[in-house]
Every structure is written in structure tokens, then in C-alpha cells.
Image (tube, rainbow, N blue to C red; front, side):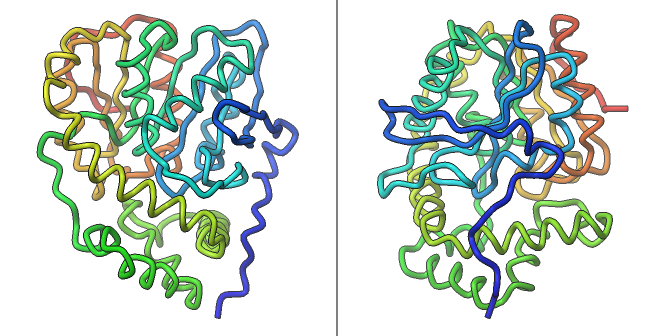
Length: 310
């Protein structure tokens, strides 16, 4: 039986930047990190499904030297409120826009990983007036031919998914091993990193409120995303928001071909492929991710195409 609790401490190097912001319209209070020059352009970092703001722990310090950086726990995840409700991409999008309002930010850059990239991409299409630029990491709204793996398909079945998830609460090692597809080489991470990831994934699965939010998000996303593909190519062709697409070359969750297809479909998008990195590229190659984002801050996007990160 796992002895982990759902209490989740901030990443030590970011603890001084932790705060909460209440969103009355969305009915939640969000945990976030907020650092960097107040007068600098704002950049909001949005994590993926089942993750939290600490996934940006190594990218955040680099970016906040030059930009105002806000890394948020989405509603239902991490240390943010987790009400019983339907968790959908439009809800997350509305919460992010309300967060900008609450913090007095008229326009911001959005950086999203995986599910966070879907949310950021959707926000840019819905409200391009609020989005200065986009960085999509290992995911996007554009998924014309995405195939789900067997594990995800089982998680989509009510009752079966919950049964499999609860098994992780009784087996801390199995919970840790469930992360293997998200990294190019989980066992190759530094020991201190493996220890943190082991503890953090077990803190997540111990939280029953996050479990409910996880399944609500996953199942509604599976139903919602295919319908978004209708007419999406035309909408992307007209999206003028400068977009940087960052993909791990060894991504086993969303293959790099998905990033290449997006770069071809959206003229304002430029693709950077990070050699040797998996789905959690911001954790495995944080310097390459931060450098690509900062380079995009200094110059407009190149002509559509693909390049490898240094």
C-alpha cells in the first residue's frame, strides 16, 4: 500500500514565487508561480493532463530572467481547487482568460504542453486578441489522425479506468512505471530527478479529487477533440498568432509526425525538434526548450519548416 499523501509541496527553487489567485467566475482558486520583471511581456505556462506547474521547474528560472512568467496548476490538478464538475477544454480556456483578467494582463504569450498545448491553441483561435504568441510543446488542437494506445482506451471505459488508477494507489512502483512512455528513458534520468518524479506521481494518484478531474478531462477530451478537426485547417491557415512548435524527437505519446503535420497546416507555425527527448521534453531538455522560447521572443518566426534544437 502506498504511504504517499496528496499533499504537494512547491518545487523548492520556486517556492518563493508561489501564490494563489481566486477566479470567482470560474469558481476556483488557482495555485501558480509568478516571477520576472513586472513590466516585461507575460508568458503563461500550462501543464499537461495529470501534471502540474512543477513540470516547468527547470524552464521557469531561465525564462523569468527576461519575462514575467506565470506557471499555473490547472483547475482540478496539483494544488489548485478541484470542484466536482465537468472539466473541458473550453472551461480551462475560460479559466486562463479569467486569470489574465485577475492579474491585470491584457495580452500574454501562452506556452502549453500536451493537454496544455490543446488549451493554448484553442484559446488563440477563440481569442487571438488576448494571445501575443503561442508555444505548443508536444501537442496541439490539430490531431486529424491521432490513434489512442491500449492503455488510454482502457482508461476511457468508466469503471475500468478507475479500477486501473486505484491499483496505482496500492503499488507505488507501478505508479512510477506508468510514466515510462512519457520519457525517452525514464531510468536514465538523474537519481535526484527519479526520486522527485517517483514521489510526485504517487502524490497525484493518492488524491481522489484529482482522480475525478483526470477522468472527467480525459473522457471529455476524447469526445470533443475529433469534432474540432472539422474546418480546422482553414482556421489554422488564417491564424496570425506567431507560433513555435517544440517536439521531442523520441515522443512516444504524440509522435513527432504530429508536430510536422501542424507546421505544414499552420503557416504561422515553426517547428523545433529536440533530439533524444521524449514527450516531457521540458523536463528532459529544459535548456533547449528555454532557448527556443527566448529565441522566438527576440525574432519573428522563420518561414515554415523544421529544425533541430542545438
